Length: 105
Image: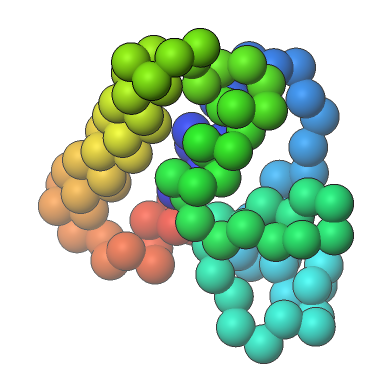
């Protein structure tokens, strides 16, 4: 789910800690409800994949200079999300996996 965020951080050369669902409770026992993906930045949390990607794109100069380029960047965010969902659905059908199994996959 967070592939777009990982791509942006890799492109920008930013180090980050990638905590997977299985280990999240160890790192954040204070959270009773988990929402994924989650970006913690300056003591605040953001829990929407597209919002995280757009914020990082703006921070690292990938969002475009004008409204047209920003719209093109939004198209890329949506395309990566859609492609990821298609691949996940394909693998689900191919291997007979449920969604939670795919998160671990």
